[in-house]
Amino acid sequence: MRRGEFDAVYRAGKRRSNSLFTVFLRANELPNSRFGFSIKKALGGAVVRNRIRRRVREIVRCHRLEIPAGWDIVIHPKSNVAKTEFAALTAEFLRLMPRA
Image (cartoon, rainbow, N blue to C red; front, side, top):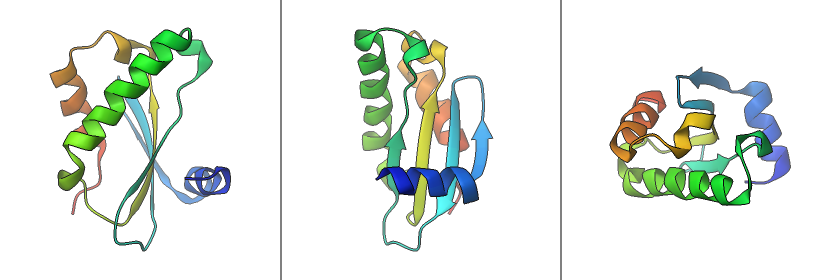
């Protein structure tokens, strides 16, 4: 996704959050869902931020078929994502995803 598409999701989309993630959702009329990741520098150094990014990308990769098509989704992980158990991360992430 490009910068303008991120901005459109922030402006016109819905926001859902829990203790681990804030997720912005917007319908996109495409045959698939698109994902964007925004990891703030406040979460830590490059090593920590890259670890968070890898963990969230892996969740999306493994559960792509469970997430309905036709959405632009921007994911903002929170600080405790780096240390939370992977199974708990997955459950909390999928709880925020739109339903088919």
